[in-house]
Length: 330
Figure (cartoon, rainbow, N blue to C red):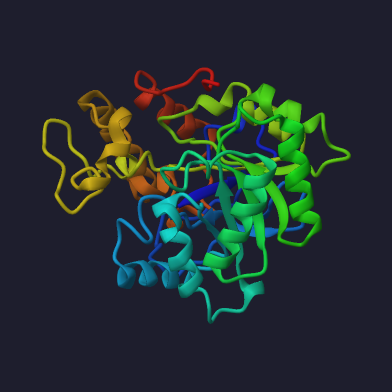
């Protein structure tokens, strides 16, 4: 899952963005998510999105994955994010099958390219040839004629940026993608792409890691994007599940959790006891609001909840000594 931020000012970046306060909470899964415009595009997307890294096609069996997808639609989510490299095509293939009977205009579909799709050393990066090859392969697996958002999964230092942007622009003008985005680019890389528009298509979204525990984008990326109509579609807003509070310092993780199974490799920076202890200091804050710790951080139940300045300061005080911030490495 991820949160969509639009035009987020730096001073507001540690919250959940502008929204409407709810009474503490009678929420169970009967409430629907709200919607926001994605950057300078005309896409209206749910402010909570459904991601598929480490899950669909690989880490989660198809039946529970379908149940999760169906629940997401039931709650009003319409934005689904994947990538060609997730399971090396397996996540896209799952979604292509699971979405096949739904009207194409009932959901917004995003995918990505960059990481190696095999061990040949050839099918990777953002070269002109790879852009055209990977979009066609993704569309075939997703069983669709177009994606709403096509994202550069990382910056490619081995390919001239002009070559990448020209190819991506052709993909848009061929009707294979409606809009373009990127993930984990630095501010200078983003600015370089902005400087090429026009004539090339302009990015409308950024997908950085961002959470209460990981605030690297606040320094440069979020302000630059906000000034240029680029939304944040953040990944890992729950800190790989740590911000739910289900992991206890000094105790082994439950075997039926991400940290307790083969997906735990992705959680190294968040599994230290000091981080887990800091997260537990968020529990009184959540209790005082009448919401869960996951809602304080971000999940489907967080849509529409507003955290005021006093709450945001309390969160900062609780986890301030373990927050990761600074510059994104190039």
